[in-house]
Image (cartoon, rainbow, N blue to C red; front, side, top):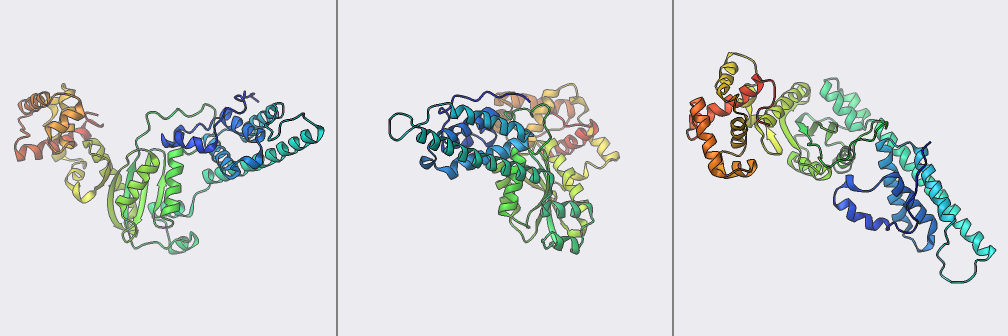
Length: 386
């Protein structure tokens, strides 16, 4: 088993000071083994009566849960903690009254450290086990959501989950952009749910118990919200906040029995949203019905797709077209998003018109180019101009 070097005792800030780290993003909180060990050492080395012990142990509990989610074995955490406490015992302890160390004072100090060690061990073990249970057991909401999406839910199963199924739901397909600054997963660790995913699930369970049913992964998933439940926009806004990234969703409203088909339609609509480069937030199927229909194979889609064939050798023109359509035909917004001058946008739009014969300054040209862009992206089998 690997040995862990603990940082010098007494240099770690109190848990309250870690809020500054958390404000920069939950994933940035330093819950690595050396930091956990140093925190435990500081607690064992301090005068317990002078500590805000609840806050200290809360930090240790959060750290143990985060370690469990990352797949760090509990024996490594406990070993690092014990080594740090042993180092604390060998360090002169702070004293309210200066004077020579007596056997009684030494005994009292050892008793205090043993008490701290007992509390730390129980706190770490309890938080670790609870997190493992959360990682391996589905919540009632997730169980019912999976059954509704599979078309196998029954009133009996809903009652067993303690949730009353609604007659009609907003079915939302979600995508969560990955955090570019997130560290890569540890090597040789058990797979676990990411911090963003855990926070999203906790938010749903705490704020909307039984009213927002979801099957989620690190990349997205499917969310079911009763039509008479909380506003879908508010739910997506809260999830974006706790995930630390803007969530994009496509929404389809359907009766309970039609949820499996509605979910497939919602995810296809979400794919259209991503291909068009539309902004984050909720996009309703009713607003994208034409674009959705263009995803269906047939001679119409093939013809529309061929309209943009002249742009295949000009990827910068395809990118500009995609961005311009997503920017609601605003040349200034398109220029900002592409980091080019507005005159460059004008030149590229003119080139698109010359090559395709379709003019974005005309209503029929906009309609045909938007339709052709969707059809062309599916004809190529991928996302155009990404």
